[in-house]
Image (cartoon, rainbow, N blue to C red; front, side, top):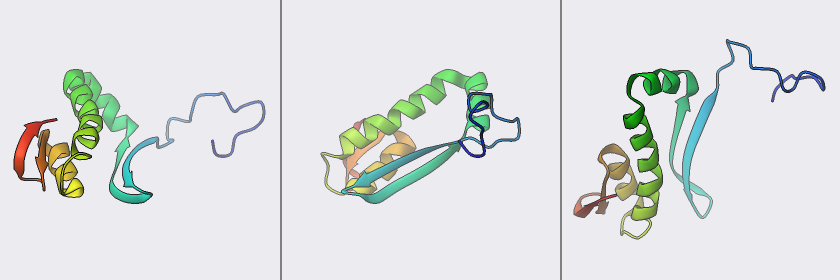
Length: 97
């Protein structure tokens, strides 16, 4: 937490504080895929369509798990995050993640 005091570190964040969630997939320490999400935008999306937000988040976990077992991991992951299809080299022998 930036610029907090020893008595104020548990106080709510200021309204203008930008809070970001980072999603990163690495292979042996090498970043393969990265996204960042603005919490304010996600909050609005949750109010609009919570089931879709939850499905898209769990997809990020399922895709990493499924693509780990496929040839062309990076291509597989990129495709899978977009449409939920876990495919060898991003386009062959597809299955739902």
